Amino acid sequence: MEQFEDWQIEDMVLNTVNGLAVSRLNKFYPTYVSKATSLPLDITFKYLSEMAKKGRIRLSWELRCEECYRTLKTVEDVIPFLNDEIICKYCGEESTFNRENIFPVFYISEAYKKQQQKNVQVKKKVGLRRAITL
Ligand SMILES: [Zn+2]
Image (cartoon, rainbow, N blue to C red; front, side, top):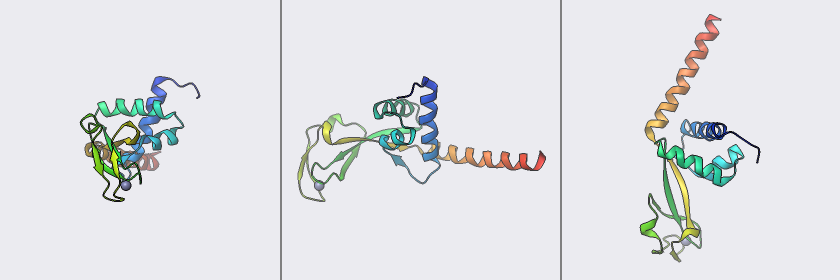
């Protein structure tokens, strides 16, 4: 990996998530941000978790079926569900939840989405005014 300063990585991750915030999506997987920024997944996850602490996004966990990989449940805290057994409503197989079939997902806060959309509109307005006055 290329050597980046802490703030550069923070910016790369933030810019990518800002882009997601103005889209119609309300959730995303860390793998998307990792691919978009070309940062390793563990680093991406670390920075996304830091962002989650500040409230722009919220970390949840998807419990997936061991057979068909479909999401059976989304929870904010995995600990109470570890070793629970659930029958998959799609394929009928029984899954035991463990670290292998739990995947992180980030939800984008509504307030942050609104703010980002407003920022984009403000940028457009400023751009237009400049186009007229300069
Ligand atoms: Zn299944």
